[in-house]
Length: 508
Ligand SMILES: Cc1cc2nc3c(=O)[nH]c(=O)nc-3n(C[C@H](O)[C@H](O)[C@H](O)COP(=O)(O)OP(=O)(O)OC[C@H]3O[C@@H](n4cnc5c(N)ncnc54)[C@H](O)[C@@H]3O)c2cc1C
Ligand code: SF4
Image (cartoon, rainbow, N blue to C red; front, top):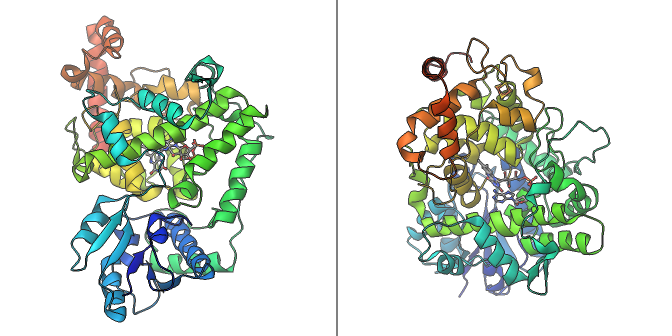
């Protein structure tokens, strides 16, 4: 009896559990490009194009490996509107009575598959280094889930950067040597760019025709769309940029959107690269003396630590996590996030890059767009929808904990011990944005005062009951309390006026 083997757009791995469970002679692999997946949020056109192009190439790879593949194209009038509709159509065509699926990383899709009038057997997604049950065991009984402790466990368990049971270099974390500002450098290596082949070009035309109103530029498109390209991108990053990764990890430059970042998240999230192969490649560079430990440890921590940790939080927390709103924020997302011009150079730069590239690096996402939304009291569900829409690597399991937990502190402190908020001083220290800004980062009040300076204190003041006893925030409240009362009143009044203009949709 034929079974249907479901392969989703982010499950493009040769060793996918559902493919390992398949009998190529008897079973039918189902892959489907459907409108619902392209529109449940307004995904960036480059993100849709990447997923469709990578699916088409992966389907061919499966056929070459001897699988029978039923592939439904978006432009085929027979194609149904959703994954569920396509599975039912294929079941009717073949008489199949069971679906085998690798558990999706999206609660919406899990619920849709569970609701089908066709049994779906979910296999755990073992492409992650920490299985969901193990994460749940680690989390059990802990009051707070801190990434740092989880990361140390993962180092011990995998042996990555370990020497005789101790962390390489005698420390778990070399961040004290990282987090430097960066200067423009014309010789800084650029990420590898892949010119679209005929197959990718056809997908770009299709996306242009079908999703004309989604925010974001479709072209130029340079993302890796199959494993061979992803391996080239990995090689290039390891050789050219990894040695500077630590130093430049938190820096921001208006004219250099990539600095020494890897641009590998989309390849890893779609399954074209495995997290362990990426970490091992980086470790080898250090062991063979080609990259310093601060860079390699910092890079491995992002994957072995953060990436696995947010996966664990997502699996543990269930679908309600997406509705968390621990600080009770309810403002609408300001139109500047969708490209309405703003005089704030930092936001204008980060949003323009996002529009053009479907990419912004971590500190732009956390300390510019995320910081501002949090300070401005935006509803975390709207912030979540924006991040899920606009980035090339955005999938619910990784985007939601980063946005709702890390960036918006909406999960009641499950993921982070304090909110990531800052005044303009942090952005000024880590970037060159403020030099070209209509606002003055040094002004704490007045007509040109940097909005981050006003909103930072407004945020702390309005959430005083929640944060003033947080040991990591006591000092901030002391500083606020030491200011002259008249100054504090002026800051709050100007912040209110700014928020009034922002939320009324006036230009800021
Ligand atoms: C508000 C917010 C939303 C985010 N949304 C996403 C998302 O939808 N998808 C996504 O993959 N990452 C997300 N991140 C994490 C991080 O910003 C991206 O992984 C990173 O910018 C991808 O670019 P890169 O490959 O150049 O990463 P690098 O900076 O070069 O890092 C190397 C790798 O580490 C991993 N990594 C780094 N930080 C994180 C993190 N916090 N969580 C998980 N993995 C991490 C990624 O796989 C990345 O490719 C988000 C962060 C924030 C603050
Ligand atoms: S002055 Fe303020 S608003 Fe302008 S770029 Fe600097 S931090 Fe951003």
